[in-house]
Length: 117
Image (cartoon, rainbow, N blue to C red; front, side):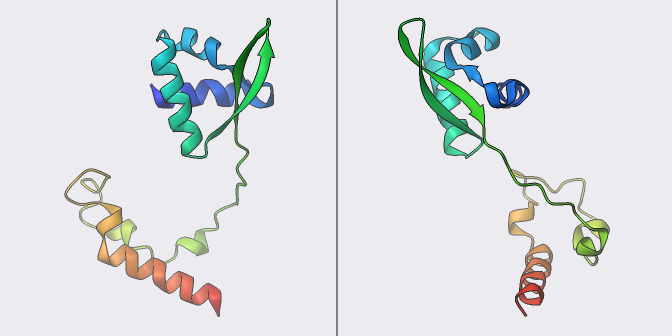
């Protein structure tokens, strides 16, 4: 439901979505809607702006602008994921995960070292 909420907020763009309207779109209650908004805000995906709407204070939910950078294929040169035999099983929450991959960690550390020199 969090992903659905984030997509709705992103589609609204800079004008945002009132928190109460989001609950209705998601067909949930105010308690769950508020929790979803709080989680998205804590992840840095949205910001909540206090607004007065029809004589009541509420929050307008607006997506946070993220800076996008174009990925160059040369940046990915040597990434061990492309030749890994475990790529299909590698995912968060699995026994094989990018966060615990020694080869990926070493490759990233080399990139960092290379870019800092």
